[in-house]
Structures are given as structure tokens and as C-alpha cells.
Image (cartoon, one colour):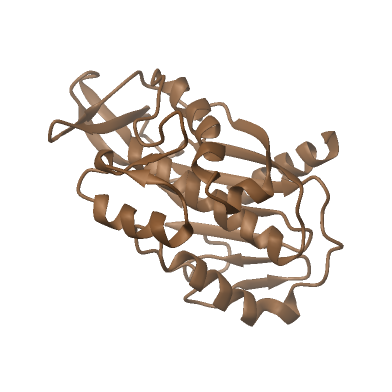
Length: 263
């Protein structure tokens, strides 16, 4: 267990160095307790690209992950938008490793004037934090299953604070309430502490997926003073009405992956 935690930390540190510092990122990484044997990835790159594209094509927000060939290394494949040598990744970043580990990162948050703070903040949508955590946890687990890895996996969720020169805006969770998009909870003036738990891979590929993701999401939200998730209830049911303006997309997505949801 300790060794996999160390692997998870290293996996996350290495990937964060690849990310653009222009806005916040939500990063979710997994490392199975019983890793795969480590088959070289190059021979599987075309098939994995098609598989990844199929997996993400039904996500509630359109993301071009898998539309372009991955960066191929002996022990991993990395999917990023096209970039030049030495350039950081923007919008998304995804790694799949030969031992069954995986890491996904999506840029989240925009700069807004916060009425509660009286200054610019990086706004993190509560709904985005919820569905992205669920989607990436499922994709990572499906990849492990693809390599015939099952059992438990260590999971780490991190909100990466941007390092934009001359800009020190804090992070703040926002939510839609009564037709208004507004802040909730408190600000954080740096990267929040990572949420880290051990979960069962099989539960991430079943109707229990939202219930499995919920504690990780709460570990993040509570650092912003948000004590409960409006988007995943205590029974592990996704509440579509709180995804304001996107409830039909969420309905289609949850049906396609076989997880419970309700208005």
C-alpha cells in the first residue's frame, strides 16, 4: 500500500510539470494496488487511441481527447492537444501507464469578480468538479480493467493552483442557485490539499460509481467550506437538476454508463 502511494505521488508530480500554469486544473490519478506486468505500450497505441475516444465521446462536455495520436513512450501513452517541444499542455492531459496506472487532468475555472470577496477569483464550478471526478475515475478504472487489473486502487484528486505571473487570485467554488451563478463557501489562496483514498476498481465500473466518487469530491469541497455535494446525494444518486442547463446531457450520460440519477 505504501509503495503505491509513493508511486501515485510521483505520477502526479511528474504530470503536473506538463500542465499549463495559466488556469486551475482538476487532476485525478489512480495506481492499482496490484499493478499489471508492464507490457510495452507502443504496440497498443492505435487501439488505445480508438478506445479512449470511444470512452470520452459520451461525456457531458465535448472534449477532443483521443482525436490526435498520443505521445508514445515505452511505459506510457500521453494524450494532449497538439503542442510544440517543451510546451505545456492546455485544456486536457491524460496519461495511461503499462502497469495500469492512469492520470487525467482538465483545466477548470475562469476569472470572475467575486461579490463576496470584492476581487477577482478563479471560479470552480461545483457541478464541473462533480461530473469530471466521476468521469475520470471511471475512465481510469476502465483502463485498469483493460489490462486485466482489478482489486483496489489508490486514488488522488488534486486541484492545481495556477502560477500566472502577476496574478494571485484565490480559488473559490461557485454554484447555480435560483438562476444565479454565485460563490459559496470560502476562498483558498493556493493548491488545496489532495483528496486521497483507496477504492475498489469494480465499484468504479458499476452503478456504485457516484457513491465511490462522492467521498473524494467531499474531501475537495470541504476545503472550500462546502460541506455537502448537491450533485451526488448520500445514496450515491446523481441529482441532475443541479447541473443547471445541462440536465439532459447528464441524463444521457448517466444512462449510457449505467449509474443512477434523478431530477
